[in-house]
Image (cartoon, rainbow, N blue to C red; front, side):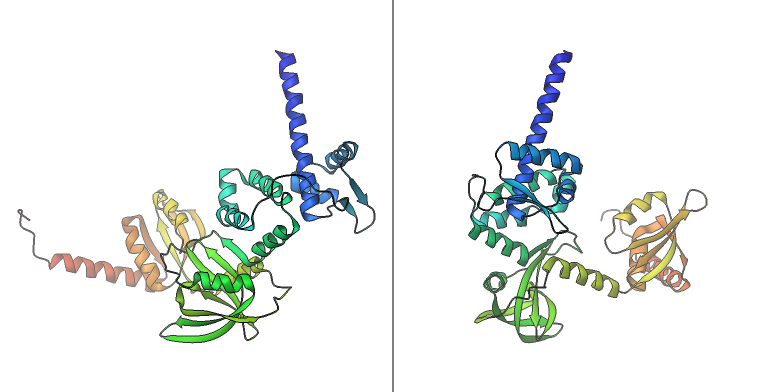
Length: 339
């Protein structure tokens, strides 16, 4: 039994090493020069393990070599490729759109997706790889939702065409009570849950547009130079953070039950700033709402599970609403037993 387990362990170790060396090969083929430190961080092993793997790859006939110096690293000889099956750019796009990193991490399969992606990328000719890089540059998936929304996008394909072809776009955009006509240079599409946005250069300034608010769109047969320094995902994260900073804020101190605390932590539109034990099993929490009206509406929905401690204007408003509700019920004629 011990001999069987020992052999199985050795086989498993060899399998893991083979998988890791294939990952190294694909990373070098797809992404170019990598230092031992970079490979070790990507594959979650030590640099010494990477060096042993490099020696094994070289001994097995793979043309891998190292460059010395501050800009050095490990490379594959020019022209060397694996012989995996090819894949279409549209198939890659379906993978990128459907496989959001957060969901893959939640399921515990993010590493498996990364490995599969590298194998598929290695299988394709340079023309397909260039298209994949273009897809990654111009599409971004943001899985953290503000809210669920059902919207129609009659001009999504038009925007997508302009983004893909690097052509200017003329849009009629609904904002508040008016419709603006703009000619923009679309740089990329962003999907945030079920809502589509696109980022564009408008007269030298970056703007974010909601696709569902486009009343009309037309692709113009006029190209524009794509800004090399622009990074869609970085821009989106920065603009999202700025948007959140501009949101109205209304902090309030509440006495809440432990039963309610779990609900509060799941709410999308409030933030728990502080919490501490209170008296008789209650908790005291400082919660950030959007506005006074928003705080009042939420607290009334909590019922007897929450009480306002401060500010006084919120206490007064909540009490006024409670008295108005009571008055409405007291003035209502009693229902007959037959209704």
